[in-house]
Image (cartoon, rainbow, N blue to C red; front, side, top):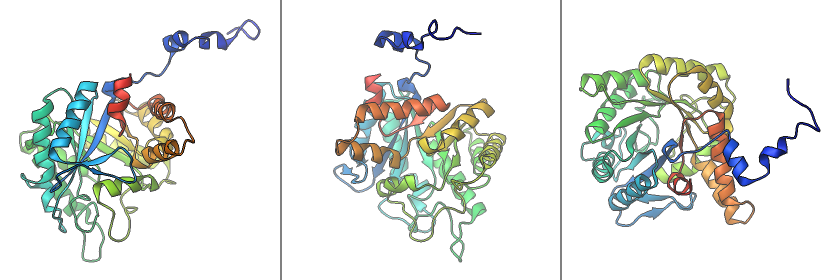
Length: 327
C-alpha cells in the first residue's frame, strides 16, 4: 500500500537531472549497440546513401576506419553487408572466399581483433541478380530447402573469413538448424548464431534496399517474412523453432513498430534478445530533423530507450558509434 497525494508526490524524484539519472529504470550502454555497415566491391570512395543521410557504402579502407571508430567508442559489435560487383541467380559471391563480404570480414577482424564482435548477415538478397533471399524455382518462388544449402555454405565461408557470429536473415524454415549443422560439421561449433527470428514484411526497409542494392526485381518477400498483421503467436512459434534448432540469440526486426513482440520475446526466452532499428526508422528521424521539425539527438536517444525498455538486450542501429560516444 502506498501513500496518496498530497503525501505522495512522484515529481520529487524528477526534480533534478542527478535525481532522474540515479533512478532511471532503463540504461543504454555502448556494448548494447551493434553497427550495421555496408561494403561495396569496386568503388574507390565511400558512396553516400541518399535515403539514409550519414550512411555510406564503404570501401574496404573506409570500412576498416568505421570499425576502428566503433571499437574505440565501445560499441558491442558490427554486422557487415556485402555488395558484389557481379551478381547471379545463385548468389555465387556470397560464399566465395574472395568475395567482397569475406574479404571485408578479414579486413575488419584484422583491424579490431576482439575489441568488438564482428558478424555477418547470412543471406542471399545482396548477391542475387533478382534481389530475392534464396534460390528461385522456375515459377519464381523461393525454394526453401535449396536455399538452406546455400545458407549453410555461406555461413561456413563467413566464419572461415573471420566472422565471430552469423546472423541468418532470410526467414527460411529450418535455416538455423541447417547453419548449426554445417558449422558444427566444419569444426566451428563454438560460433554463435544470432537468428533473425521475427522479421516482418515491412515498408520500413526501403532505404536499406537502396544501401544494399537488394530490392526484389519482381514480387516481394511476403511468402517468407512475417505478416505485420499476423498473430503474435506466429512470432512465438518462430522463436521456439529457432531455439530448438540451436539459436544462441534471437532478433525482432523492425524495432519501434514491434515493441510488443520484443517484450513478449523477453518474457518467453532465456537467451539475448536483439532488435534492429531499421533504415526506415533511421531515415524518418534524419529527414524530420533536417527539416527542423524535431530535436534530432533527443529523438534518437528516446527511440533507443523505448527499444531497450521493451526488453531488447542488443540494438542494431546505424547511430551506434555516435550514440556510444555520448553515453
